[in-house]
Length: 313
Image (cartoon, rainbow, N blue to C red):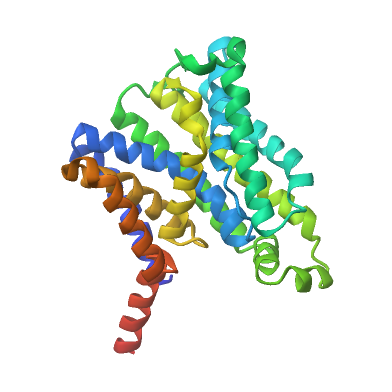
């Protein structure tokens, strides 16, 4: 087993004890970080592996949140059914819009995804009879699974932890498959990948679909945790934040997606003592990380472990 994998596994198991020691507010922030990590893992597949610039991930999170909320409140779907349905709906939506969208490249694709995010927010805001419009959607039922109602933050932490672990293991396995290698080949050299027999457009659409599935799962969890959602929760700023989480953590790594989500969820809270100037410090700090750590947190950790291994060797 690689040292980095062993360390990550040990840290994941150790995190199970965090609800016993964290204050209530910090536990809530951690839960929101785990929920965000699901969406960021989707960006890892689309952006980190396949090189697709995705500035509309918050729209998929929003579609998943509203889908799960409506199915559970209006149609009596259980938590598991609404969660899986939200992932399926967003995945299908991502595939449908990906077919025409992913023929674009570079900044044209980035602008198209920005337009998709803006359009999704407008549609949600104006579909008042279905989504509650600008007033938001409340009364989302508590998550319940196998007779356990996740009404407390401690219980919901373990629910989010298990779902995130399952998705992470699945995505890591996917990266080691032919599909994962094909996506990386497209990112490195799309023309060479195409001439080698890789169905480039199909692979891009599938990657975008998986990105949507992860976003939908994240949104469904968020809705059942907060019990209230509104269009402003899924705007362009949120999409940019999710992408920054990935880049800071390490854009090609699932572990980086999780670490970046946790760091950028807690960083604003740690800077609250600065008052009104914390946003400026937060922005400068993120820029410094992007410039000085181009491979993200995971890249730094890997280099440290490699140097220690070389020194011991």
